[in-house]
Length: 163
Image (cartoon, rainbow, N blue to C red; front, side, top):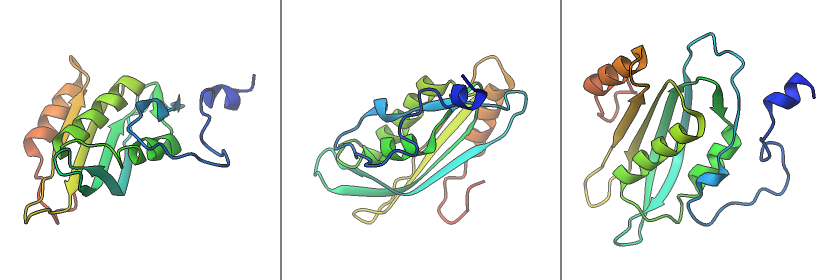
């Protein structure tokens, strides 16, 4: 098997025709591929400006810009599978804070990154916006210290453009 085929082993959604969109939350949609640069720390950032979930009480849609940043280790999340996974929240009823925590936990379980953070900037409903932020750094490493520092310095204010 060629090196390229080995790297993409298990990636089934990328390049497939006839994409099927899940009608309910499904972490099984997530796929990974091999990080070819494990000797280098680098950031991977995904921005999803059209994230949608449902209020678990009213059933009304909640809209957010979701940002996921991570420092990969051995495995990386494949972007189309991530898109399909995030889309699976469309009919999922959960509070904003729960959504960002579930996403972080699913991605941690999937790829065991050195560091990861998820920030949801939800559109206001009823005159108030909710912007939950969660992060994780591998315990006992410099990434745990990075997580603590980024958590402590997190601004969370709209219009700041991040950090």
